[in-house]
Structures are given as C-alpha cells and as structure tokens.
Image (cartoon, rainbow, N blue to C red; front, top):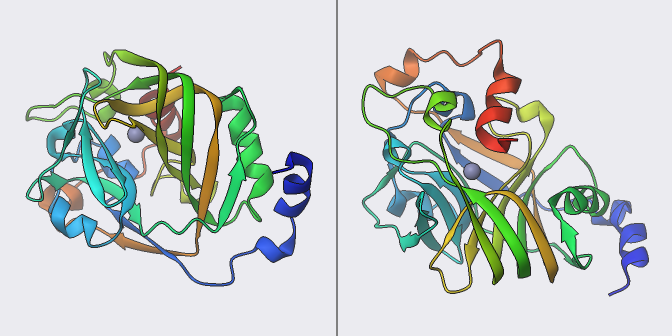
Length: 255
Ligand SMILES: [Zn+2]
C-alpha cells in the first residue's frame, strides 16, 4: 500500500464514520486514580460488551487486554494468563472491533512516529478510536501495575515503583484506544495501549515500542456507554482533582 496515497485519503471526508459504533466503559479513569480498585463487573459480563479492549482487574492486579474475544491478565513480571469469567474489573474500555481503516504501518517506527501517523489517517480528532497494531516488534517497553491491598493507596502511589519489562524481537499485538482530550477524566486522553505477544505468554501497559513492520487497524467509535459503579467508595470519591493532568501523566506515561 502506498503511504502518500494513504495520507491523502486519510483526511478525506469519505473516511468519516457513517455508521454508529459503541464503546463501552466501566467506571472512570479519575475513580481509578482515586484508588477505587474494586469493581462490580465480571469479565464474563464485560466480554458481552465487546471482543476487544483494555483495562485492569480488581485490586489493580495487572493490566487487562482483550483480543479476539479472549481476556488476558498481564502481571508485573511480564507474564500473561487467561482471565477467568468470574474475575472482576474496576476499569475497562471495550468494543466489538470492526477494522474500518486498515493501513500498513510505516517501517521501523517508534511510538512517537506512530502517534502522528495515526492522527493523519483518522478522519477527525473528535471521535474515539480503537487501535490494533499487529506485527513484528524490535522491542516493546511495558510496565504493569501490581496488586494492591486495602486500604488502597491512590494510583499515583500504587504505580510509583513499577518496574518496566522489555520484550525483544517479538511478534504480537498492541491494542487500545485513542481518546479525545475532551474525555480527560473519563478516560486516558491520547493513545492508551497494551501489548500481548503472539504466543499469549507475555505483555503489559505499553510505554514505548519499535515496530519493524506491521498493520494498523482502526475502529472509530461514535457512542460511549458509560457504566458508573454503585459502590459507596465511588459515590464518595474525589473525581475532579486539581492535578489531574499530572496524575494521568505519572501513572500512564511514566517518563
Ligand atoms: Zn494501561
């Protein structure tokens, strides 16, 4: 596929979503930041809302990635195991992934190159996008939250000491979402993505990567179904902290 032609096509109104597509989200990023780590929703129920997505598990016990309808739990040592249907999530975003936009990724690109590339092929910054990058990675730098015990610390403290785990020369998939800035607080603005290798043995929350070659698939989202917890913790949570930007940066970007 020719890259220049792709770029030219990317901004064409023909690529604007013409059908509605719902993303489902359990709880809020700000609730997670405030230490609301126990959810009400089971993985079995979550998978009924989508076959693709990311999130975390009760007690912040690892990162979640859902690919092809299977939910994986990624732990601090970089390992991946299949989650059980009865586990619960305090925060997750899922959808039934339909690859409306498909592009060959530019070769040998790092995360900082892919982000503007994705921005150039999506028709508008004002929709939500589910992203799937499949291919051969020279390296993927990940980090993963570790299980917390009660009383739960805020996420900025809970993630302070997370070690990063690097994967090298590996085939796999990066899955996640590009979220508009206006959703700040509901979700993580910008790209929030998780990695799992092709063998489904390892992965984590992606900090950076170098993709040798691969494919980018994009599913635009036009509707958001937000499910707020009914718990006492949630009703009493501080969901509009003044240092929201700093908290999101420290917990999700970690540089
Ligand atoms: Zn994450």
